[in-house]
Length: 339
Ligand code: AMP
Ligand code: MG
Image 1 (cartoon, rainbow, N blue to C red):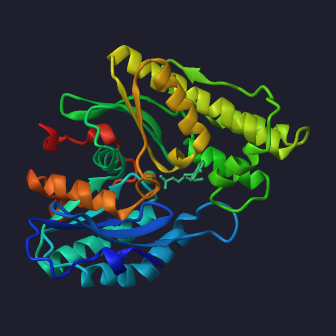
Image 2: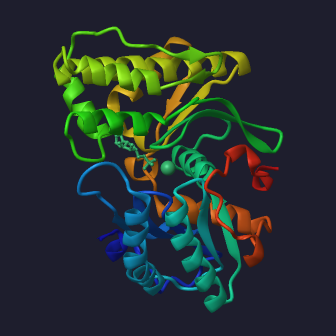
C-alpha cells in the first residue's frame, strides 16, 4: 500500500470549507483520497493490483480491492477533519471492481450521513488534468487502458469528437507486451524497448474520420515479432499508434480553432507520445498541457475533486440511483459545475 498522507495531511486545520473523500477502483488501482477546496489534495492512499501473469482479471482485481478497501479508506478517514461528501467511480470500468467500490461508498455515506456522489471516471481524468495544468477550455486527448477519446466541452457536456473503434491504446500496448512475455502493465515496458529500436516497420495506420482503431495494428505488430526485434516492433507500434492519436487531436484543434491541448490518462505518461503532441502543438502555435504523473494514472484525487465540484452544484446521487455503470460514457454527464 502506498500512502502520501504522512506529510501532507493536516487533520488539525480549522478553516477548511469543504472536503470530499473519493474512491477510485475501476480497474487496477484502488485509490482513495481527500480533496478540499482550500488545500487541494489533502491525502491519497493507494493499493495497486498487479496480476502475477496475463492482464487484469476482473474478479481477481475485485477481490484485491475488497481485501484492501477497509484499510485504505480507514487510513484516509483518519486524516480527515469533516467530510462533506463521499464520491466514488460509478463507471466506466470492470463490473466486479466497480461493485466493490460502490458498496463501500454507499456504506460510508450512510455511516457518515453525508451525500453520495457517483462520478464518471473519464470526466474525472479531464477535470483533474485541467485543475493541475490550470487550463480551462482545451481539446482533451484521454488515453488509458480501456479508453481512448478526443473530447471537448461544448454546451453543458464533454463531447466525444473521436474515439477508438475497438480497444483502448493502453490495452493494445499491454497486449503487445504480453506477446513479448512482459509483465503487466506493458505500456512502460514497450516505451523502454522502443527507445532502443529505430527501424520503422510499416504497420496498419487506421484512422477513420475522427475515430481510430488499434486492434488490427496490435495483431500485425504481434505477427511482426516473428521477423523483427522486439525493440523495432515496439518502436514501430508507438510511432504508428501515437501518430494516429496526434492526427485526430490536431484535426479537432483545427476544426474548433482551439489553442490548447490537454493530455490525460495513464498512457499520457509516455514521453514519445508527449513529444509528438508537443511538436504538433508548437507547429501550429498552440499550447500543450500534461498534468503531473500521479494525476495521469487512475487516482482517488480526481474522484474526490470531481465529487467536490458536483457536490457544490447539488449533483448528488441517491442510493437507489447508485448502481454501477460499466459502460458509463463521459458525454452522458450533464456538466452543471461549468455553467
Ligand atoms: P489508467 O487506466 O489511466 O491508469 O492507464 C493504465 C494504462 O496506462 C495501462 O494500459 C498502462 O500500460 C499504460 N501506461 C502506463 N504508463 C505508460 C507509459 N509510460 N507508456 C505507455 N503506456 C503507459
Ligand atoms: Mg483511467
